[in-house]
Length: 222
Image (tube, rainbow, N blue to C red):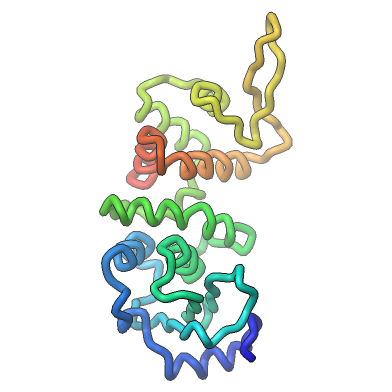
């Protein structure tokens, strides 16, 4: 019985007899587009270097749909073809970039996978890799928001009050005549604020064209 914690040597041995991504008939259409989105700046291995294990190679609890061994450039999917979101999620784990830390590994995977699928479906290849969204500053985000909405928001608090969304770094404070104000919760660092603000924009990008345009503005900045 092959379990989730396969030894790296065993994975490497399998890699000799398992197909590469480029050899799979389903690696076309939306899957190829997702790969192209995530390969901006050549951040992914070549498709002919990525090994795809057979579904029966790994036995693990049913809630696990995919696994990645980054060093071996190997991915296992419970189903083939996989769900596009699962495909994007695992490819994100293969990206090897200086700004990609273990701390942010799952943040990248869960937040950016959906964006990669949206961009692929819209046939949009961004100027910079989407993992760089978490490298921006608060000023970058605010400037992009101002440009897209054509409103000179003074702060992220004012913007979120405008759209009616309360991210973790904002708390409600009672103002004059019992009105509620959006104010910064200073227990969150500048880095936290960027992560949460970007996460909110990505979450909204699938249904709000303005938030999607803000994301694109950040991805196409110089």
